Image (cartoon, rainbow, N blue to C red; front, side, top):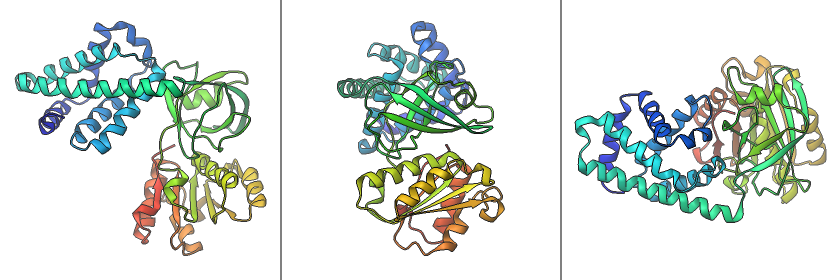
Length: 368
């Protein structure tokens, strides 16, 4: 990109205006292109955060095409589910340049305008091309009918959905989910199963206090309802990241979902490795999927399941599950997969690293 340092400096200067920047951008965009407003959720807070994060990522990686190109291409594919088409990018570019000009004031020079125009044109062109290529192989979204809704706790449900057409995904990947109760509001969830011949997908959902989508899925969803699912994304929690090593899986709450999917994929593929699954919970009642896990362990001798409950596990005192895992064995050369709340993941990863586990053996994502 042209003069990427100038882009970074100007973006940092604009960023000093905080939340007013995305507010101005979206106000301007909806004014000049009101037809795009239905593509966005009613509550725009999370959307504004995503805009700033995406722009920050683009300018930060402007000099690193190996990092930037896959990110921008994924953005293009992701925007298909919003029914974004090529002409919408012109309005977005106009709103972006107007926002930068407004907040930069006298610092908005003709040279800087040309730099941002060239950079945005390149990003938009890459996104459009990626979307067009993806449309050859995949739908903009999958329709998924609820065939079973099991309440496993007052705030937790297990959903079984049947897709209207096949979806190729790897265990550990996430998909974006939209419920008709909240149009254009998408949240990521990870299937708790490997691909199945019957086209069903299972999600484990806990209602987040103050959230929108998760309470709707837990309390408002009914059998027969139809959700929309976006294309699979992510690779940090997939088996290929482990490069064939034995596995130590550490789950907190519904962070169990992708780890159970990994176990199912191993069972389908082989050759089998040694797998130790540790499941943290506040109490025995919170071990909502333990019967299914025990069935898997009985069927596959290479799998061992260890519940970690209450204060003994440290789950809700210091938010780390590393202690009992490290005390149970040496785990030399194993790959670790950690999934759960943001607090649990960060604390567990930190303690595992402090105990000498190499960084490239630690696989995790943020909160679920």
